[in-house]
Amino acid sequence: MGAPKQKWTSEEEAALKAGVIKHGAGKWRTILMDPEFSTILHLRSNVDLKDKWRNMNVMASGLGSRHRAKLALKNQTTPKHHEEAMALSTVVQSGEEILDAKPLAISRGPLRIDGPKKGITRL
Amino acid sequence: MGAPKQKWTSEEEAALKAGVIKHGAGKWRTILMDPEFSTILHLRSNVDLKDKWRNMNVMASGLGSRHRAKLALKNQTTPKHHEEAMALSTVVQSGEEILDAKPLAISRGPLRIDGPKKGITRL
DNA sequence: CCGTAGGGATAGGGTTTA
DNA sequence: TTAAACCCTATCCCTACG
Image 1 (tube, rainbow over the protein chains, first blue to last red):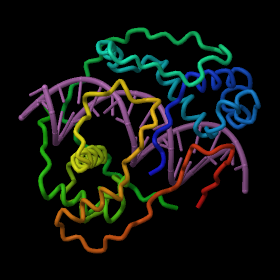
Image 2 (cartoon, rainbow over the protein chains, first blue to last red):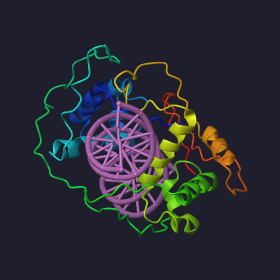
Image 3 (cartoon, rainbow over the protein chains, first blue to last red):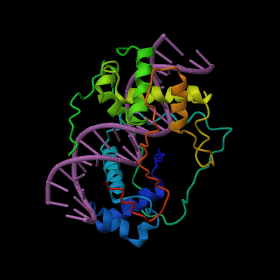
Image 4 (cartoon, each protein chain N blue to C red):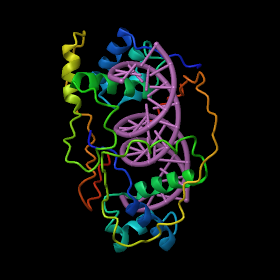
């Protein structure tokens, strides 16, 4: 394949937020065409912006099951500094705080079922 | 608790391999929908198929270091070697009664690392 | 025809069990 | 402990609607 899953960087998220603030949510194409954001989001499509915004919104809803405190016990001999370009313009990089979510007790029940609908929606 | 570890049987593995050869790797839902394999894999989900295929690939690659160096691979020029062609070859050599093993160009050719090209790959 | 909205599937990371 | 199976989430793809 060729899509190694392009993870969104902080810069891209910030640009997306700024774009939404500037042009409004839903104006993905407009945001993408803006020279200010097109520099950072030039490899994202309007659909990608829409998807990312959706995901961010869901995450902010507090629907974070139980996954937030695990990666913090192994960093010592591997100085892993990873920064793409975290020094361009501190746009809207504030507000997102990791508030601990309640311990949702999702049991590992017998949920082997899968949508047997399939449905050939091939038009 | 509740979900006993369902070990993969030889029939299931064979069906998975055949499905990959027939429909291509990544088309888990399609493989699952195929009446030929759905009979055997009816209690597996598309995610299960993907996971199993991943495990098989890891085994075939001779690599078994997935669970060790997790915090040390990000911005490296690590060669992305996860070609399905290699996997297919392994499959063929597995000794299955698989005829009609054509390459099957299932690649869509996304290639996100390009530029301002819209890439209208619309069918 | 273009863009947006939504649903569904895939890919990868991480956790649990044998 | 290691490895296979499983679970969760982000991202990507496809289809419908405006």
